[in-house]
Length: 268
Image (cartoon, rainbow, N blue to C red; front, side):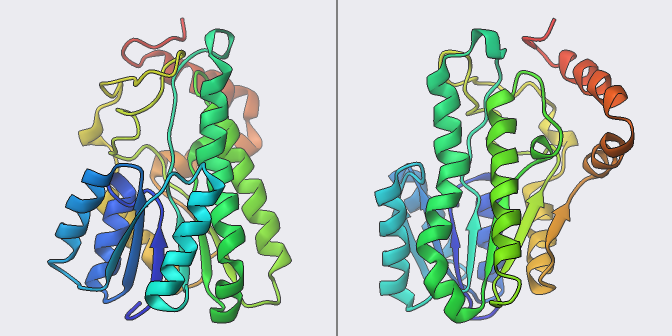
């Protein structure tokens, strides 16, 4: 990974920040994007203790023009792109029957369209470098989760897009990797949207018992190095994927019962 040029969207916290630190330790040249200038600045200062090859771009990946600027700034600063990691994402927790559709649109804009925009404008330099496109998806993109309809929809859409993109590029040299972490300790649940679009606040799950972002980052880099196509993480995630193929009806009930036990769950 030394001297590889890596873009990480949503690189200021959680999995994205852990990925940026892991790449920095390996000598990569890194560009991180985020919507908050203060967190971008503080993350950059932390990364500069490891490497001087760091560039930040304030960008909302749900905005196409911001994605164009992100790619152009990367090319202007480093002259190419080797790895694009589509990590920026937001979640939600609410019953679809009570959900403001603007929340659904916001999730699709960030989680799905952000991946489409960044991948589109990074294609030419990635074709030149025979690089890698990564989508940080979710087990929610394999099994639909109740009270997270918008999140699951965006991740299913991401997975379908990236799978098609991978097949299109079987002979171009570009590798496409879909990474599906299970429940991971991250502020994505703290910033998840409620039915009216306001922040959920406290996480409904015990973060200490989950996979840590640093574990995801290390597994992801190894998968990129080996040019893997998929990366499915956590025992629970692997079991969910396996059982859903053979016992989907049973899995529906199992998933319902598990998520109904969350604190303040909207599922009754």
